[in-house]
Image 1 (cartoon, rainbow, N blue to C red):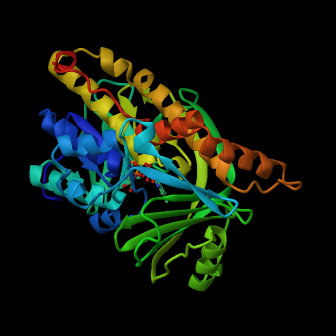
Image 2: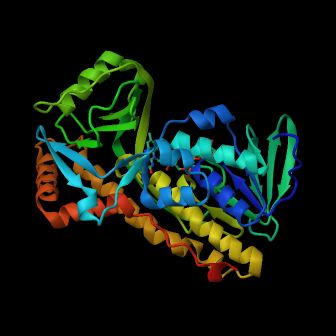
Image 3: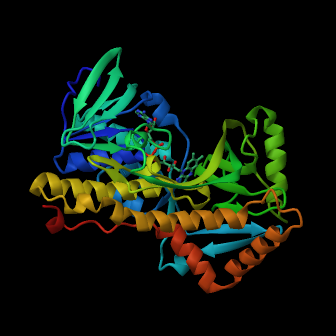
Length: 406
Ligand SMILES: Cc1cc2nc3c(=O)[nH]c(=O)nc-3n(C[C@H](O)[C@H](O)[C@H](O)COP(=O)(O)OP(=O)(O)OC[C@H]3O[C@@H](n4cnc5c(N)ncnc54)[C@H](O)[C@@H]3O)c2cc1C
């Protein structure tokens, strides 16, 4: 879309991940102009394998805004997960514990592909491969996004900037020192993740506690298995041959009568584990959403869902402001999002703490506490319900009513 004149818009969106693309589409549906600036090329963005667990609220929204047709067809609906420890599996039945709710497995890259296709069809501007994006004058009424595109220096005048540019983006850093407060935990381990061309070994996700470290069995389709194993934060991926990965996964998942199906590994990567929140989520005319303003360790499967939940709130607030000049929802954007963000932070931290081998646990005290907690979660309906309701529906956002918006 390089030929499009993009010198002025209502909302300048930085980043074409789930947050930026869903926001752009919600605004388009409300008749609000936006321009999305993305640093990478389309192929890279559409091929980036990351999240895969969608909450019902996320699925409902994607269907409601017209980008859920393939998701409905190809998404795998799950009604439970397995917790595996001491070599035995225990199922947590989400549907039974939460009044019929479940999760849908559909790769983040597929969500992104669907959203990019909708954006392009709408004709609204989305520029890939932009460089050196710089938000300027965010405390003023008409902020500016400076950037380079196809070798040319460009300026985009906006009324609002949405920073949807992920954890390593530039928008959060555009806020003056001291205006945001950061709270963070970096975990002393990471995940080595693989994507393998083989049918999943189980119908549902398996979260596995093991003395050698945590492992997770997940999937992206009936023919693609996604597997993770706990590793060192600075793990050298080159030292992990395919054979070593399969041996390690098989050792951790070992359980009588169950075996791990193996196939060609088509993708490998190491993901650090971090909890992070910047508060408030706004400064002047800059509004931050998704990973740009909070990171959760992937154990709780909340990151993508939280990103979508943020931009739902933001889109409704912007719609009210642009249609009525009423900024009351916009002013309360952080206040509306942060309780949900902290609930998700707690759940992701709790799952992470319960399931990972703690490196400094010399006498095995932490491991014993983890096993006691896992036993409790799997034997008490109250404890299992707590896990289930956090897993399936934490980031549901009630839509603002039409009356609140217009
Ligand atoms: C291995 C892994 C597994 C995960 N599993 C799950 C899961 O099961 N469930 C779940 O809910 N979440 C999961 N997550 C988290 C989830 O992927 C993220 O929370 C989600 O991508 C956040 O979306 P976002 O749009 O906020 O940010 P991103 O997806 O990071 O998108 C940001 C976009 O901004 C672009 N960008 C960055 N800087 C600039 C710049 N300067 N200029 C222009 N563009 C820029 C980036 O290229 C990117 O396209 C996982 C993450 C990882 C890494």
